[in-house]
Image 1 (tube, rainbow, N blue to C red):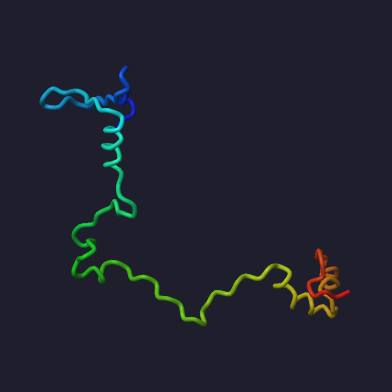
Image 2 (image 1 turned 60 degrees about the vertical axis):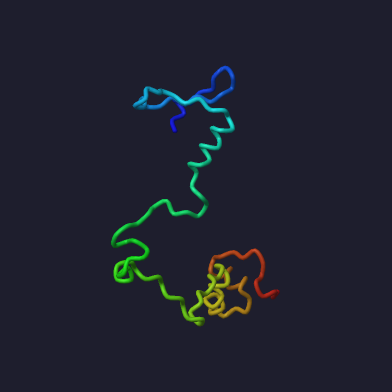
Length: 123
């Protein structure tokens, strides 16, 4: 559908001019607005419908499809759950505690870092 060839006549009907005249000589079609919407809605694909159709080797029911299409990744073992990333202060606590102080704030001050509050509630 080209919007340049789409217009509305004086009576409120939709006029669509064809790109090339048909064999019978018709150059345009005139439709009531509701009929035009019905024809336009028929062109919209159904939801969740694949618009790409595969044929031959990549067809969904090909006999040897399992040899050609890559397999899905296997599910991870229950113990292989990804560990949530730690925030910066918690990831550096062992390093900061290694300085000989009991409070991470003191260790951070010695390392030239700042904490907004004490992580362990000390002081």
